[in-house]
Image 1 (tube, one colour):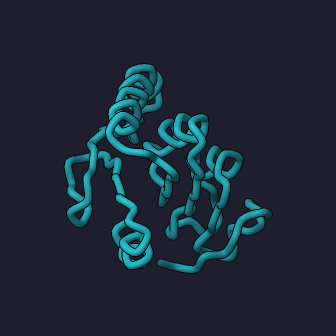
Image 2 (image 1 turned 60 degrees about the horizontal axis):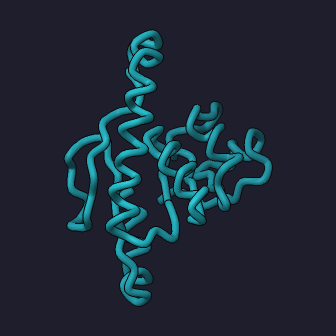
Length: 144
């Protein structure tokens, strides 16, 4: 996301848009406002993921509510983490445009997030041409 932001920053500044980040941890993203959500799943246990899923969904919805109260959200750009799914769904319902970039590390398989976001995003990008076989309507964006 930091690499993508570096490419977008000049255009965003000209249009006087504020970028707000949602992260899994407290890692500040180049000085723009960011909110920590925590992970939405346990990467080592499916059972633990199922048990914690309702709490993750509520935490994500509450975070989106806080952001919507503070900022006028016009779009969402995600580079792949699963934490983007719930905010994207909620913000899409509020009229935001969604742009998703499938992970650069994917060549022969799709991510779970990519499978969901492919149907949700207004613009869906892949960073490896081999993924076009799985996402036929995707745009090739190349590596960031």
